[in-house]
Amino acid sequence: MSLQPLIRVYRNELLENVIPFWEKHSVDTRNGGFWNCLDRDGSRYDTRKYMWLNGRQTWMFSKLYRTVEARPAWLDIARNGADFLLEKARNADNRVYFSMTEDGKPVQLQRKIFSECFWIMALAEFARASGEERYLKEAKAMLERVWDWSSDLTKVGRPSYSGETPAQSLAIPMILLNLIEEVAGDDRDAYRVEVEECIRRMLLHVHEDTQTVFEIVTPDGQPIHSAEGRVLNPGHAIEAGWFLQHWATHLNRPDLSQTAVNMVRWSYRRGWDPEYGGIFYFLDSEGYSPVQLEWDMKLWWPHCEALYAHLLNYSITGDQSDLDDFMQVHEYSFRHFSDPEYGEWFGYLNRRGEVTHRFKGGPYKGCFHVPRALLLVWKKLETMHTPTSV
Image (cartoon, rainbow, N blue to C red; front, side):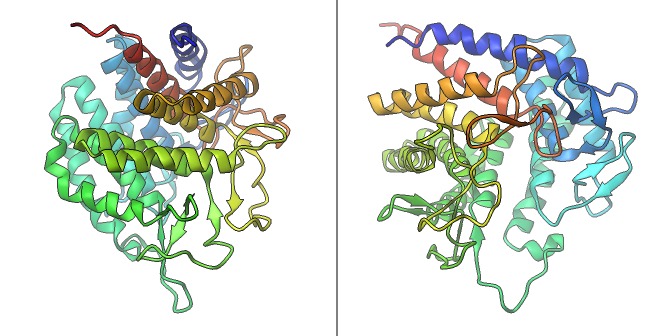
């Protein structure tokens, strides 16, 4: 089948249905930054601002300006976020707040590194969009701190207890691998040591014998025999797979590329709901009932990550099964998540695919997974259908 007609579908969904929603409703030009808690029609139901979502939206508009079209309005929106992050979101210890009041007073600071990660992504991409080097310098300096914190979370206030099983989470090496790609730009070799360490740690989660990508393992990669240790997060593993695939391509590592392909395939096929369609949020690797009460919900972001990951796989393998998986998640996502009436996508569905939360933005959903996936798929489709010169 020809995928060329989908170029227009993804471009229009991004530029006519999704991005205008955030342009119209989220930008706080008085205080700076972005409102995140937006109802279905874009009205604000809470004025608290979440810094990891502010970072993600700053990154998104910077990326659009740099890679789609140099619209001054997009750069202005990105600057609105970048300056709020730079001037208000950090404390004296260079930690980035999780949430703030709309005028920039701190509300919550997590004992995690993810707010800092998206602060870094935002400033790095805005630096390239604006041509202002000072933002990139700030991003690189923060990346050094985050790299140090990532190996010992007690440095960000995470307590350590004697009864804990030593463990590592997939979330940290995968986000750092993606973060380095964003910060390094064309100078990826400058971070070669860090990249190899992230890859080493990610691969500890990939178990070929059972075709499983575990969310949490021991520091040497062994499964943990507990409810927590058996948790599978299919969307997360799929996202990690395409992060790894980008580096496999850059490093020209066919072995790593095949592992990345497998991470996406295994996680998607285990995670797909054969009865109602869609990707389960959580699973238990041994088939027990997941302890997460929301385990069978269908969330927007795993489907967004699967869209791009399957298409990326297909562009590399040419395997019909990868194309079939892409089309399966494409049809489900546009049928259940996209909102042609008010714009953007719903985020939360029950197992049957019915909307459970009507809002378009909240503490964990912002201007990121949907537009990023639409942009990546659109550009990948264009690349796949551009005739090569002889």
